[in-house]
Length: 116
Length: 114
Image 1 (cartoon, each protein chain N blue to C red):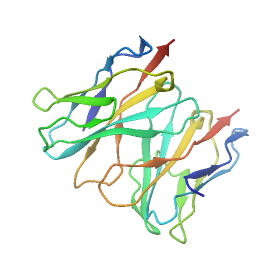
Image 2: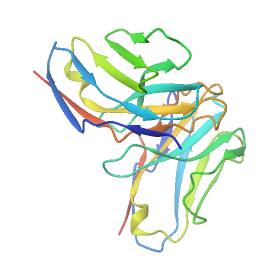
Image 3: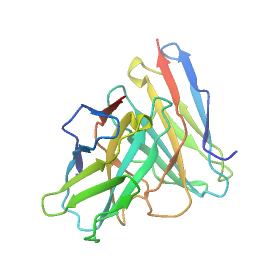
Image 4: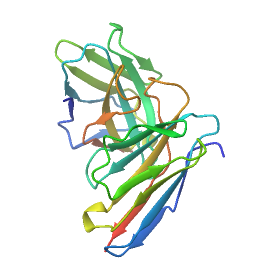
């Protein structure tokens, strides 16, 4: 069975600074996707970034980038130039390719606070 | 509407009662998912529909939970004989294509069982 671990329950960062959220996972699969989802107080989960395991290049989306270390099973999220609107819960998630579509396995989340 | 719509936003019920939670996915999305999020936890998969059929219901915790999607659009999650442990936020999501993992979530239905 796959597991996703987020070891930082809470993090804080000053506005305009950079912060890195950690995620590790455990799987015997070779083909999978990894995701970071953001959940603001409104409860609506929003996809931040996605990484295909077969791609060596780290995914980037504007101020968001990942450090994907497949051998170490590590998938951290870096947020640059943090903004107040980045305050939210961040969930790391794993999905096996070829299995049940949409059966994402989520970590417990990291609560990020961006301080002015 | 433009996004995934879930009703009710909040539901308070008594132990033993029957509850229905509704999800209206994004128009044109063929895949629909239900997740449950307990306090302080990440979402847990319950069931996935492709069209009208449940392609994977392996996450449903027991036979008190059931979901339908009769016309391939709106879905209803049904919980019989509710228990206090069923209290959680029930999230619905939809997606356009298979195996992308890019799910569009609604704001969830918070269920409280007294």
